[in-house]
Image (cartoon, rainbow, N blue to C red; front, side):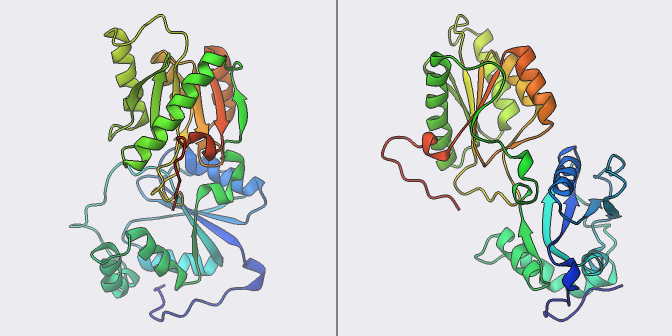
Length: 308
């Protein structure tokens, strides 16, 4: 089957309005998001990216299929047959496709000029162009947090021991540092230890930053007698949560503990917590406090936040 050449949105069966298609890359997050969306009552189709997604662990009642990178026509045909209204993209990509040897189906050949225009050039962001292309076909690009709200961190004390006053002071400092780093487009996180900013996240990511903090501690660049230390994590103001939402999981807890930290702070409503039962168990076992604060508590005094 080939993709429609017309720009008119395909006809939708009224009984299928609101259906969700989830494009799954690698890792456990797509599977967890799919199950959370199902539990929330959504009708769901999971489309696994060939060579990336492993859909074997999906519940049997969840409809699924697997498509390769060049099967653009089959992709849109599958969405139309299912009656998808919203499209969610989640999961890791371990290797980029070899475009030199990529085999395109007829639908991809027909759409090639438009696809190239979407990816290359222009003043709009690529994501906005993708969203516009999907809108022409009656689809809305959505984020994981919109279809699987149970994965989103809430506000308050979430797991582990109750943080001390000193730990909360470090959290406040790390939160404002994360806000500042985000507005410099550096990264999503910051670390404060015993009242001192010791790291801002850069291109190495959160895990890399935590490894760097551990090395600083071993080098005695800050007091090893400090009993507090906080990782704060929040989205950058320019970050589009439909494709890139900050996430923590069991590995984050392990790495924070290895770095000598006592607390992890996330922005409530804007950070995913994956494998939550494991996260809660590790926080309890390792003595790491997990807390969620609203965005307002991340802003330095007098600062105005303009998030996309």
